[in-house]
Image (tube, rainbow, N blue to C red):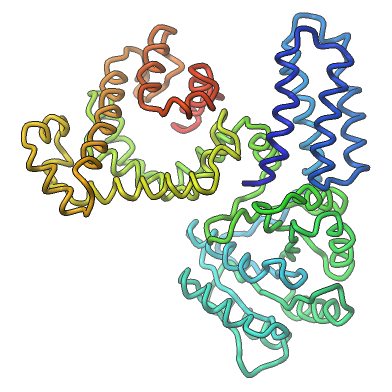
Length: 497
């Protein structure tokens, strides 16, 4: 996941202060040295690291920390603010306007992932209801149009290009004019790249830019290059007015810090980051949320946004009504699994939950979890409507064991797997029943855990801990971590808004 090792090392450094008997100047210096060492090893520019260290030490005035305040929290807040200043140039990026054509031109060196990123961005806006399209003006790289055509066809995005026309300026102008006439809102133009910064590349970029007059020029950065990106970004910015940046390959390279510091040096805001090869491994870059995830504090705002995107308000109201009555069926569980799948890769979601951190799941564990979820859904696909909608499905299967045999054969799984699914469902159903009986939880017509008294909260936590693998519970920080993960920052209150 994004700079996972850097985030882990910073969290460990800050965490050591919490274990220290006395927090003095020596302890603070040791913590800052560890944080700076982690940043340098991630290829963050040394000038920026020194500035961050000096600013942190000035702000963490040891005399002010003696007044009974939470020292660890003050220090964590200071480190957070300085890391935020590192990645946030304070410039508002271009925002596309609905109902009118927004021409977006992509530039960058060859191999940075421009063509793939073009498709990802078009798909991102398409999911949000925009009319998006792609124009391939890359006539330099062999197979560029074929790649864009294949990506666009898979994502069902309209595209334009030519196998015969060799002038990228003509292709770009014709494509943009065509899609403007057809009423498209996001018109993305993919341009040629080179293996290095060449005069011919910059001349071509300038000609294409003059021909299509883009609303936004996006520079695609390859995170694996590290600090060399700074000079590269400046060269591109001097030729065409780069309005924003997308960083690719942040999931796989230790030099990702170099890309972030290059952005800080050039002053162009990052708008998206690529976190994998798949079309949905593409995140909007919000500096505060990014640093929160880096420090293991989660990104509840982003999580709520993802939940809101895939939630049907009517279905949510009906589910809330059933929860009030303590009813939770197998169909309800199936629908929740569907929502989890729509939210994107597991590791992205886990990184948004406070207490888990961006490196909570390894690639192997993530794939295993996804496969297990799909297998459970396959089992439920083989169930009859009566079984899916029965308020006490576990008892129904226990009374008639032939149902287990039928479902296992229909889904191509073992009877043991069907029984395991039913046991997992029973834990969910018991939790819902417990929640339905709690006074104050549904005060005002909405589910709000902040209305619960401490005893009710403890009972609910105890019930939830039974559903979670002990190893996972330990990584979350035990019962206290579980409570923070669910209710920190009043996430439920944000969701109902």
